[in-house]
Amino acid sequence: MKPPYDITSRIVKLTASISEKIGEVKSARLIKPPTELRKRNRIKSIQSSLEIEGNALTVEQITDLIDNKRVLAPQKDIIEVKNAIKLYSRLNEFNAYELDALLRAHGILMNTLIEDAGQFRRTAVGIKKGNNITHIAPPGDMVFPLMKDLFDYLKNDDDLLLIKSCVFHYEFEFIHPFIDGNGRMGRLWQTVILKDYSPVFEYLPIESIIKARQQAYYDVLGNSDNLGNSTGFIEFMLEIIESALEDLLKTQNHTITSTERINIFKSYIGNETFTRQDYLRHNKEISTATASRDLKEAVDNELIEKTGERRLTKYKYKNLSDRIKR
Image (cartoon, rainbow, N blue to C red; front, side):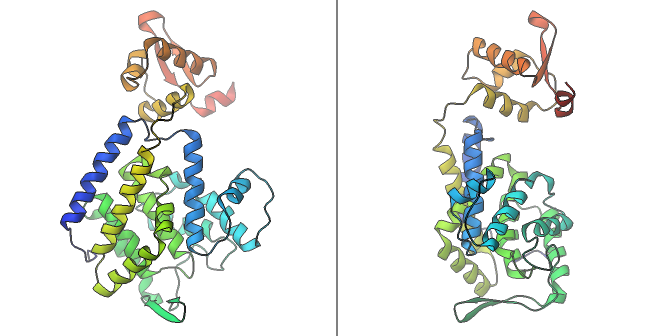
């Protein structure tokens, strides 16, 4: 069954605005942001999502863990961060539409933290805020069929993937399929889904904006529970996504280096053979001389191979295995 929600005028306006901003991101060559920005955004995502669940590590401490430096903090918090670092670094390994992929991801996220990491719960569970039970999840024997239905919806429904990612996030939290780690997994899996909508979402720190609006996030989840549909949550998450894209666009004054241009172009051209003109058409803001320097530097660094001379010159990116052999 299709989860209950309505497509409101607010949802239509937000999806249109997000599509426009993704177009601006493409024009600004920010689909794959510069290396330092990607690292910073990844750390913000991890820190924010874990802080929502009570982890006390700071951005600086998480940076130190990534750089293999010693950090003084509770062991549980350190394990949570290390697991999250490992999982976020492997996002491209997970198929957003495979139930088994979600279970594998949960196994990495909750490794050594709970006994049933990577397995759906089989017992009843409720969510408690303070002294109040705010949500009673479906019984354990309903978790697998409900999750299967949710993945069927994700794969087969005709609505925009942007909308379906928000619906999935809400329904995931409602089902609460694991003993622990549900909040982290729901937020992460929406990112995995959104990567199929646009590559920019791999490094977009949506979680940090959710953290800044944490109480509103919980409130809209509760309101959607009370109303029996996810319409309000969809609107809320689309606002979050729009804000994250706006923040990314504010970084566009960053001067892109030749190495970054070469890496960005690789994600566009893949394994196809190309010419200097192809490279220039993709990088309209640079001169012919700059394009020649970029390509020469990439050839010298064995990132690409060159064949032919003068107007017959063509280039192709080398496979990693070919570069290792050399």
